[in-house]
Amino acid sequence: MAEHINDWLCWNEAYLEETRDRISIEPNKLCTYGVKALDDALFRIGTNELVVIGAETGMGKSTLSLSIAQHNAKQGKRVAVYYLEGGHLEAIRRDEMERYNENVF
Image 1 (tube, rainbow, N blue to C red):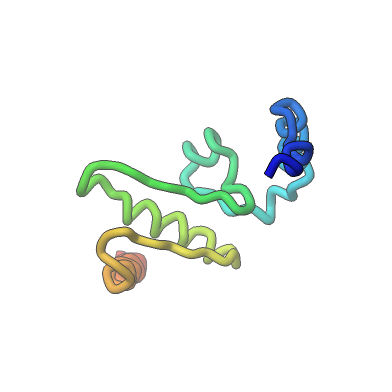
Image 2 (tube, one colour):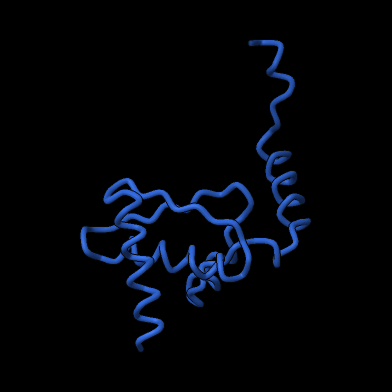
């Protein structure tokens, strides 16, 4: 393990490398939140970033995550949603209800 220590970056080198990587990213290729306040505050969802949404029961976590996923899927982006509770059947039901509401209202 000691032979790998020389491969580690100092914090300032890691910061500069991360900064260069983020500057070189084409913003149009990244996913957005589809919520102006979140997009303004957090910019975009970076490559290989995991977005975790946490809140009390009934606060709209599933609705928000589904909204973010749908927003990006409509733009042709590949998205994945993983629910710790409710599973895929609940996600499908929520998606169907969202589509129904869009068509009715």
